[in-house]
Each structure stands twice: as structure tokens, then as C-alpha cells.
Image (tube, rainbow, N blue to C red):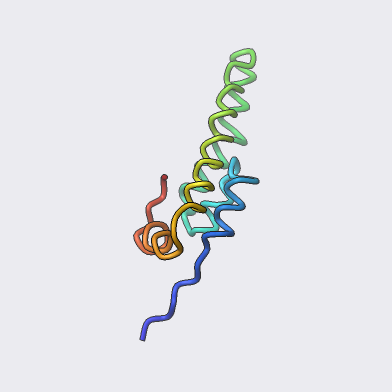
Length: 95
């Protein structure tokens, strides 16, 4: 008999909306590679670009803050069954 899958929808959605820019929601869902990509992008690459390009790179922060909020809203609008099938069982990492 298979063990039921724990629904991580609310935790993933809340972390995506509040601290998604550092990829916590990806780690919640078990997407470690994607979470590391968020961390590196926001803690290393974008600040480096911002300082090298007189602040132009910091405009990228807006994108990296907005995408997780959109992901969080998508998570919340899916049914529990659809969320589990899409993000926990089939491992759809991006949108």
C-alpha cells in the first residue's frame, strides 16, 4: 500500500510569496537545484551585475521578486489534487 503524499501547497505558496526571491519555495517542494539557482542569482550574480553596471543589474531584482509571487499565486489557485500531481509527483519545477 502506498503512503499518501503530504500536500505542501500552502507552505510552498506562502514561502514563494514572502521569500521566494531566495528560492525557499523550491526547497520546500524538493527542487534543490532550482532553489540553488535562485540563491546564486539573487545573492551573487545580480548584486555583481548591479555594482559593475552602475545599478542597471539591480533592475533584474524586480523580475526575480515577481516570478516567485506569480508562482505562489499559481500554487494557490490549483486544486489540492492538481497541485500534488503537477508539482510533487510529476516534479514540474518551473511554472
